[in-house]
Length: 508
Image 1 (cartoon, one colour):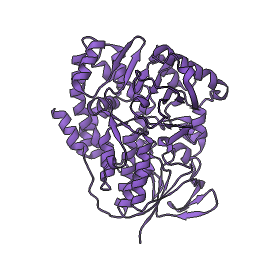
Image 2: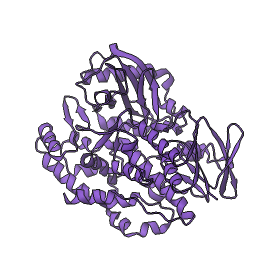
Image 3: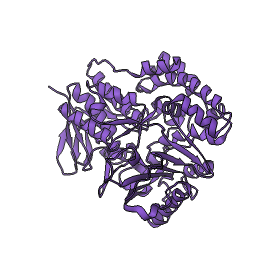
Image 4: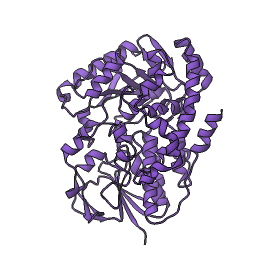
């Protein structure tokens, strides 16, 4: 008889586990509280404009390729992926640089904006090709057994992992201009952390972008989730939207059912939780809930202030991705890390995807996705009363530092999510990027893929190993799916495109 798997949450992690397990012959049902799939990777519809809720580009595409290949598919059959070049424009005051995955283009751009630094860029890329190849295998295993730490690849990676250096410390070994260092450290925002506090091993994030590029998905990155849902259903998987889980039911340490908010019960042999980790851990685990005080002892990422603007014009001369750095970026990040002060001197990320993608707005119109990293809600900043004023400050900065001087005159649709809004949407203390990626919250010290204290509850998403960001969320879900298969003695061959790609990067 088929084993019954219930997955709580139709976000990227839940959909990934669902695809893999349904393909391997399990009876899989995904239950989702919202009326749409995707979680933080869902679409937002505002009038005739379509926005991504969260992630706005895909890096490390080979991981997505592997996930689809696990079911005998290719992502290109389910979505239209566009590799971007240039990737992102980075601006500090009156200095800007366009980033590129093309080595020669990036070398020229660095030399133009930061004379004398191009050789340092070459050295960084050579060293980090080897660093990524060494660390990468450590991201693919679960750490629920001590023997995980004794594998040869783990011992080889130890010098990169067991260090007190930060990402900024590492970049200081390569670049002299502080602004250029930030071009290789701002990717720590994917983890919701400051590069001055983010562990050194995460300097691989910028390397992955500059070596392998980033991708837009026509119609929005939410179409990755749509494609996964379609593949999952083709494999016989079932998705139940508008279905809220009230409580997990147990027999000893085994989850045996989920009680829905409507009073019905669904039995399961195994359970995967793809909800926000801390929110779920404190609300749906029934008599095994963890207390809010206990959860607050953990370290969390920053939050984000989000604006989604529909415009009746297209800014064709503005880049697809643009990062405007705060005048005092370090202080801005200190404010965010301390979780108390909402910086007026903020950094702003803008996605103007209509210059690439005609499908997200009506003809002649466009949409802007605007993200401002800011404090989470741990200490209760008054976003309800400050939202309008803060929104105006964000738009003022965009007008001052870009060519969108008449932006206010062209806004015809608008949506906003504040940190308080994220919290109200079941994100614990509004920490958009989940648990912080500090050394004491990584590998086995992070909530494990097979959750400690339970026989058959598994995690997928940014709150478990390997962490936040779409590729690592996909990997967390594959790890959990594999652990379920292991528990039933089911053999499977891992799909591995990464090894050849990373080996080729080292030798090129």
